[in-house]
Image 1 (spheres, helix red, strand yellow):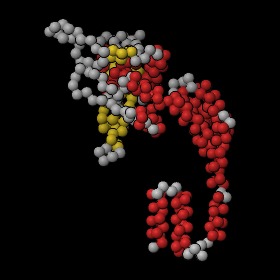
Image 2: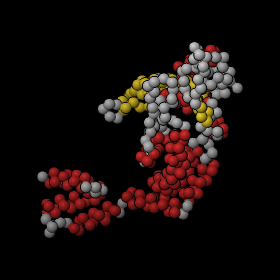
Image 3: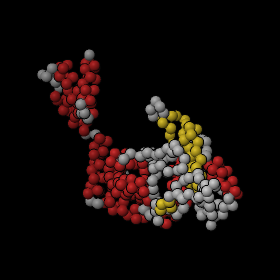
Image 4: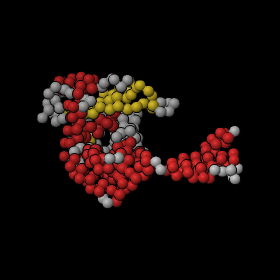
Length: 329
């Protein structure tokens, strides 16, 4: 009977929003009063238990480690460590990630505590990422038209999706930063990769090249989405390293510098969550400095993780090189 009362009260307090320590403590006191009465309540035993439980090295270490992190933040030690590490390696693509690792090594040597590291350095790094940050990421998504329809001259084009910026929370922002919280179609991806290959000029994909009856040659919208030549060069270098040193090795075409990126996406289940054992795989890429800019996307839906799309890309691009007599500078 008392066990049922204890569990019922505990669940009720959780539902009311009490935190676990208060809910458990209050429930225990109520059950003791119900069982022994107010006069039989063991105040001395409860007080002793509270005192001895608090006098625990592991329990006491946690708030003191948190305090160490806060003190380092207040004294600007953490900020200076992170700034120093960011100066050393922040210029590398993905600089905040490299600065995070290096600063964590330095900080760990000083505090010796992962808890202090998370409390002190974590606070600074999260702020740095946010400053880096979410508004710029949202602006880039819009500026590069990542989720917008391409306007291809064929009916039924699908669209990508991303939450409106006013609905972003921290978790949503971080998810979007590595591709988990945003979806684009293969056509949208090809258009964006085309802009990388085309020195920042984004073109509208199309099927119709000319109207043979009238001789009319239609024109299609072009837009310069970036003029940052250095950023484009860095981006092409990163994509090239995926093929030379990473997961896209089988996409490489001998004698031609293929740039591209593999992709792996979980497949939503109609029952909720994600389907187990199957993924949507893809590879999108181009030949850097090619005389004819061609972008190729190869996708395979709901297949085991061990499947690869890079050999298919290689076969298609090798054939295109021969067909269009492509050279690379």
